[in-house]
Length: 231
Length: 142
Image (cartoon, rainbow over the protein chains, first blue to last red):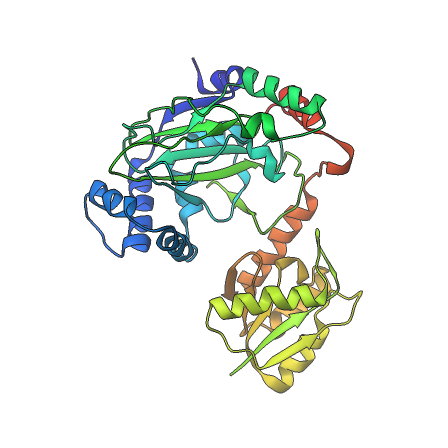
């Protein structure tokens, strides 16, 4: 099935990153910012990260704020897909997110949510890719378009959104396993989250939001978005 | 070496930020970037020309100007051309966008980017709901 068709039917699609060289560069830049080291096996660093305290994790996130060019690298690594969906002129997330997921029951668990929560636009796509193989349950689970909509509609009828129905959902969903070099793209109405997982290794991934400049915004938010043109 | 922060009208593009809020944003930015501010410039309300900054630059010869957002830059062509020329040696920082740069091209790029946002169509979030937004996506696609 073609990527666009998958997006239309399921609301999300997995694909191979076209330019792994650029993605590799992004991964190295992130690792350099977090660990101040280069060229090391990422699993050794993931192991180190799994033992970090929440304060150290937050410090790492602050360090990452000074990383420039991550958004451009993320888009460039998947340029054909982005262009096929949204054309050359885009609004892209000004600072691509690096997301850590630490193993263990007491660690942060991202409850199910829609990206639409942040109110950027219904036309914004999310592109998410791990910096390593996802061979444990440290990844993200996704409800397809139909199920996400059913839940949204049910909540809507009660006048709520992302309320107790979602927050109290059983977290036994299985995260999608991706290989390094694969990415997932999904629309902002796809319910997704992660679960507590057992592993010696933390999960490190990067995500970015983007949309066509021709599509409307809910907020003309230059804090979150920036103008970007594919050459 | 003179570094200044600038407060402007409460309305800046899509944002509404009172002066006190503007100062909080800029002070946080300068703190995070180890900058020392020597002058705080209040621009008058209902003006987006940054004319006070321009006049004061003749006296203070600013090295850095801190603003909250790219939306505070003058966007009328005749005003912005004069402004860009007179401020071409000053490094500008925009705290909300987290960007900085120096020279006419940089500032021109910021003005153009703000225009791209202002020209973008907007969905009025007060007149819609989640189901309608979902329908908009499904009817129009990307």
